[in-house]
Length: 326
Image 1 (cartoon, rainbow, N blue to C red):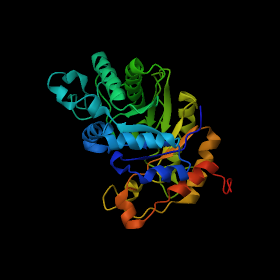
Image 2: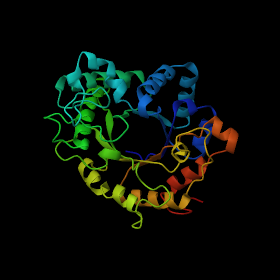
Image 3: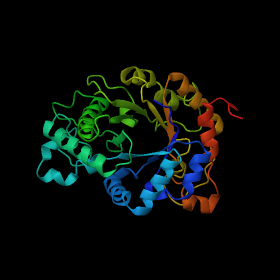
Image 4: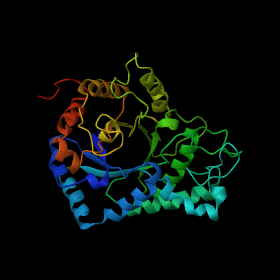
């Protein structure tokens, strides 16, 4: 499997200028990331609506001719399992710690009918967002403490519950593409490896250390926040293996640095932090490295000029080694 160098940003931020920008930065994978949070289902539905617009088809085709693969990475659960189903299928939804079923986040992963519905919807979403790729990134809801506490689920960690959902989604997607693979997102509550559930063939690790300090190297022993995030990497790689493994970082995430509010701030890429992180990730055996790069669209460029995408791509290409490519 080839090494991938990528960047993620919102679908509406994609325009003609990104074609040369990504090629010049030697970035070969673009992840389109509908906005997460409370409106994730609506932003994903908007991405589906936009997907077949002629101008978007032309942009993806132009990127493909330049060797850039296009994928979607989205918090998809609220779209896959619409909250409106709660009125007729409350048992499909999670139970909170008080014993009440709630139509707020994720699902009850012990309910087999809910998992079958999830599989069917994942197949449908894969068909709707066809890009010619076989890697998929359909994530659970965005937040903390979102697992089910019903009698059958409560003994399962957040990671185990996510993996049950991922296995079901992949089963559905493979009805459409037999060679498909699907990410397990190690993020916030699921940053540690599952303990009781085994991954289906085709599940790969995507490691996203959201709770890190972005102004210190991830493996800096003086950063307690980063040490807590990095502690689980070895177990995650051992559990899922290194094949297909992907880092999803925040070095270029101007939405994060702007406090998720517009107008965007100027992005100053911390090259030293990124270089050290990339070198460490490569040494640990991660195959692919990407970063969020949201809030770098036309509104950013009108305020601040060209974002540091080329330098970001150079550091990825160097593998964290300074001046590896003249």
